[in-house]
Amino acid sequence: MQISHPLTGSMVALITPMYENGDIDFDALEKLVNFHIESGTKAIVSVGTTGESATLNHDEHIEVMKKTIEYSNGRIPVVAGTGANSTSEAIELTEAAKDINADACLLVTPYYNKPTQEGLYQHYKKIAESVEIDQILYNVPGRTGVDMSVDTVARLANIENIIGVKDATGDLNVAKSLIQKCPESFILLSGDDGTAIDFILMGGHGGISVTANVVPKLLSTAYDLAIRGNLEKAKEIDLEISNLHSHLFIESNPIPVKWAMHKMGFCENGIRLPLTKLESESRKIIEVDLQNQGLL
Image 1 (cartoon, rainbow, N blue to C red):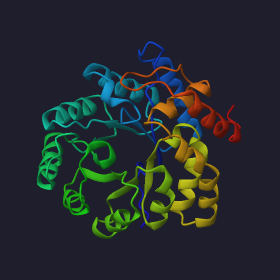
Image 2: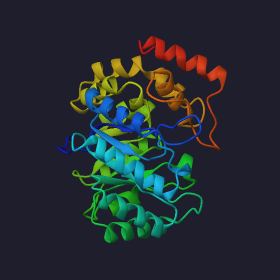
Image 3: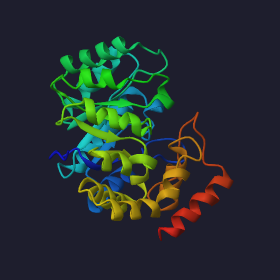
Image 4: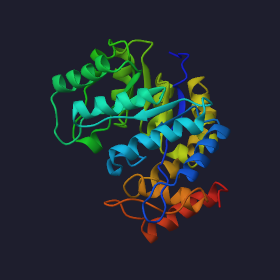
């Protein structure tokens, strides 16, 4: 079911560019925001997993979100990553995002402490009731150690300002169940680049993508074609960039994509421990991918 909403189509899980010493490079961030606006990306997700939320302190987290919103200047929606494994901290970050005029927030399932399904429901319900801003659930069990069930998502979908879910399980059976059980107005987004086109062709509404950092125009075109049901052309583009979908996870995200963006000239090769710079053998693989796309 197609829905008309600004937060559909291709959305980028934007990197947080850094200098070699790990300091945030705000000039490069502005360049990246403009690049995505010019390339047809539908929305920017700021300070999610790919934006290294785990290694930014509280003030940096808010500053990166704030600058991204300033640089976008209303030209593209900005979704702020405000999830935490403490409900009170997630509320604080979500309140900060509202104060700086984010268009919506993306809230990852609480990691490490492994709440029950009821705990997940109460966590998201509390945030939604505490902060009047549109909120998107984010389920990525491979990262968090907790898997939010489809039934819990469907239950939360009845809360007015919980408007969608980013499902990064990569399991199309989960996608099918979400499509069946969630309201038609609920935004269903893929968080897995390798299966995103199939997710959309089944009835999803778009995706939040790592690959979109590198080839935003191609990915936006592919998602738009899939949303319109043009299977053949969408799959053709997806096949063209399938190596990127795979190789951008050859080491832990965002290690490969940050190196790719550095190689393309958008930023220095900065990343924060415990993440390390891309290994030399992996660099060779991604360099070939970039050359094949005419990006080097």
